[in-house]
Length: 249
Image 1 (cartoon, rainbow, N blue to C red):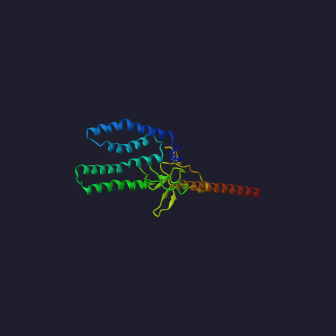
Image 2 (tube, rainbow, N blue to C red):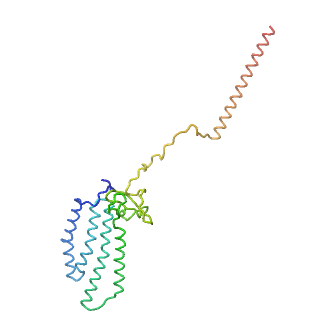
Image 3 (cartoon, helix red, strand yellow):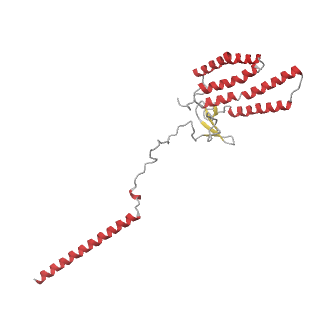
């Protein structure tokens, strides 16, 4: 199966493996670790689990899911959930501290933190949200990304997980079909190193000669023509002498 063959968002066996490993690690490893850290007063167990769960699921998708645009779309989207989780955890800690000590914390700091984290997540989630494909009319067109993000030549290109179409959007909002090719399409014009770039055909009507060669050939032809003329004149003189001798006899 090629990396760009569309499958939609179908559920496969590898997805079951991802979920089984996720819940196993979450219940057997992360939950006891969070409880022990909470007992020592290091971290709040719910906060640790909420932050670690999206990160763990994203790492499992990167490690188990097949190489495709869906893989590199779902993993960063899950990692971006850490931002609103941190904002909610901070707000919860502020409210808990206010209920306990009746002390009002710095509202400006809390506001800046919420705007930064939630605002960044909102913009990123809006950019990563699926769009409607102009070809198959399904809401499965996701950003075309690689491991390090979108390609330099296709920053606004989207790939449909149902029909495999590639489209990019203009500033006016019009969808146009993508005709450029990136890492998703193997290049067909590549040649092995050391091979000739192109086969040149010989055109007899478009030949070019060196001036020295042409001059040499011209001189040779001239010398041959002069020698032929001299031989002809000598033969004619001999014939004339023979005719004169016959007439005298």
